[in-house]
Length: 608
Ligand code: G6P
Image (cartoon, rainbow, N blue to C red; front, side, top):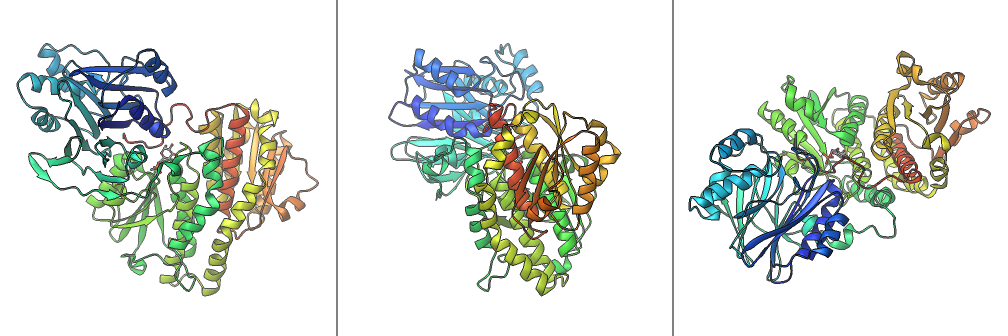
């Protein structure tokens, strides 16, 4: 979602702003803009659509200046257009904003009554107009920001550039994240450390409710009128980490990184005797009566798979709640239960809201996150990190499989502590986990079979697709369907095999691709029944199985059979997750879709 950058330096700032916006593209956006000060006056360039449009505009009408702000906007209030693109400006101030000012209508009515004229349909414009109103009443920029913050409801990150003030930028944050970067003779402020990565690796984060005054050599932080200290730390991020390498897309790069990041994550959760163990966990599994797991999107499927693991291996009942539902319907949470929140970014607004509710109900919060400095990490009592590295493609891949690995490790730890997992079963599972990176490599190395799928006419003309699986594979079917619809815009559904006869079978005809996820194991025979039911109605089956399954169905005709390595049934969902990622990737590639930034989607969804 919206990306923010602000820079005060000595060099021409526009190319640096655009460069930073490119690194924020991954968040998803539909317009972009930059503003600078030239001889004290605010000037700006904005464009609808991709950054290339903004660059073209800047090529025709360059923008000078050594202080400036930039923005990629994901529309919330007002359609994506140049008029609604940020920076939103008056003649006194230009503002970039991530989040939503919930009481914007009330503020707008008040400002219109004062005689102010609005030029955009955005909620952000009330920020620019309110600051202007205060500046006109002789408040300093600092006083204006401090006072304005008291008027806004909702979650936001803001950076403001003031006419006539070449010396300061002011940032403010409530809810959405904002980081300050310390450079050599230049200072930076942006959405996250990735945006600042090539400029500096010394970063301080604004805390909830902070506002900050940035000058070219330092930054002062405030809570209300009180100055506070926020310490800059070195981040491990470097710009080289966030390139595509030799891959045509970030998504493929991130799929291919999975053997490495699964191995790195595994290292964190194995003790010297090669037993799975969670580090210094302040949760006594024996005294936990229930888990409430919550997340959004792909991370929500990680929770649903983890429910199966915890219930099977640790006999621990689990409720899973989509975070947006948990935050709004506020279900009763039983005492003695623990909330587990899962998030790649650690910044998803719905998940944050669900966590706050769980805390308010007195629950401890364990989070599984990929960004250690994120809000969710900071809100949690216990943080279990995934070591996936930056994930740039909107569709989550390596973050998902590392989340699964951490959650399975937690279920093993809980099963051992609760005496529900035998030593023998634990050994077999641990061995399967240690072998997982190698098996994931085998799936990736056998990509030809997925490429062949990309060439299938059937998929190119499909209007919808069905994914079927049982047990863990039911949930991978859901994730596979989500990936396909995100990347290709083909409507896709994931269903439990046993449930097919209760509805989706009505969709089956010769144009319907049906992905059947059937590793050999306890559910294989039942999946074969589903397979036969689909074929009997002319449906086109794409079978995902292992060598044993493939040989059992060798005489059956399929549109395509993808053979995956044999794997322990409890670890199989992680391996099959990689397969459904590759299916979505190659299908989208053959359809010419925008793989890394599918339309309308955002990577980090910072509004509720
Ligand atoms: C967005 C992304 C998904 C992601 C979800 C949750 O919808 O497009 O890929 O799964 O947000 O994000 P989080 O950062 O909380 O895992």
